[in-house]
Length: 264
Image (tube, one colour):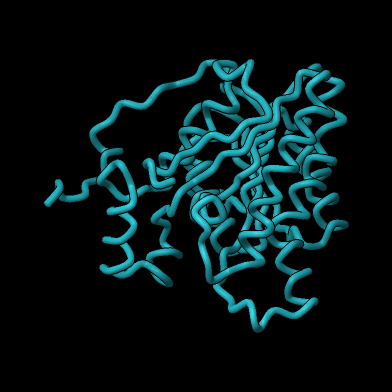
């Protein structure tokens, strides 16, 4: 038997990035899960963080929690499936914080579904939930990044389609398309020194995953597929987001950055 899983984050000394202090960052889907950990990570670097989510309860609680520590964090409620609402929310954050220098396109939902049951309406809603808002978020922030002479855009992908994962075909379709979005926009925006990358998480142990889908059997199967023996926690995804936003990754663009413990 291999070693018992432990929370490695409590034994590690993570990096700080001076270039992220006072950086203006927008995170979509930041109220819970990986998104909330990304918001916390940027706030911990001294960045000025705005985040969007339709989960008003958890979004407000996170903003209050981090605001109480002196962090510069602003929550803007928004259903990202509504492009008009998305545009208003991005404009409100820009008015309050200044133009975004970093965009983390995190929002998504991996609800399980049978391919036999998918209707055109459901498929379109899944694209709106998992893909379409990413493009329009980029469209909202790119003009100011161009004017400023650069920026970093981080699109959250998924290892599910790389691993030929089944049980949610509309989700894997959308997440595969994220990589095309990244590559195309990296070419279009690169001349303005705007970097666009895909951050690819493996199966990450968020509270939602634990509540809905993690069982002793499924976790054991996941750990057996990984090169590393420990469950993947949200903090590790957030740490890669920091790197891709910081000056340290100044020549990184149009690529996939995998954080999946060697499971692909």
